[in-house]
Length: 143
Image (cartoon, rainbow, N blue to C red; front, side, top):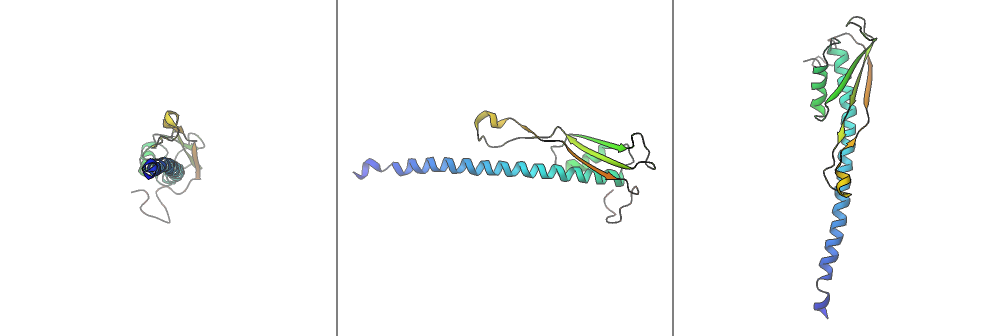
C-alpha cells in the first residue's frame, strides 16, 4: 500500500512550489515597478533642481545626463522655461517632464501578455528660478 502513494508528496510539493514561485516573482516584479515609478519621480525632481540652479535655459543634454544617472531608462525629457523664450535673467521657473517611459516585466506571470512593456505615466516637476550657479545648500550640484 505504501508504494502506491510514494510519489504523491513529490507531485503536491511541485505544484505548491510553482504557485509559491509565481507569487514570489509577481511580488518582486511589482516591487521593481514601484521602485521605477519612485525613481522616475525623483529623477524628475533632481533634473528640475539641476536645471533651475545650473542650466542657462538652453542645455537639455546636461539635465538628461543627470536624470539618466538616477534612472538609465529615461530617454525623452522636455525642459520648459517660463515664460517661454526667457533669458537666464528673466526666467521665473522651469518645468521638467519625462515622457515615453516603459516598464518591462522580467517574469512571465500571465503568459505572453505580461511580457509587453507597460507604459508609465508622464512625470513632471516645476521649480521656481533661483540664482543661477548658486545653491546655498550645496556647492557641488553644478559640478
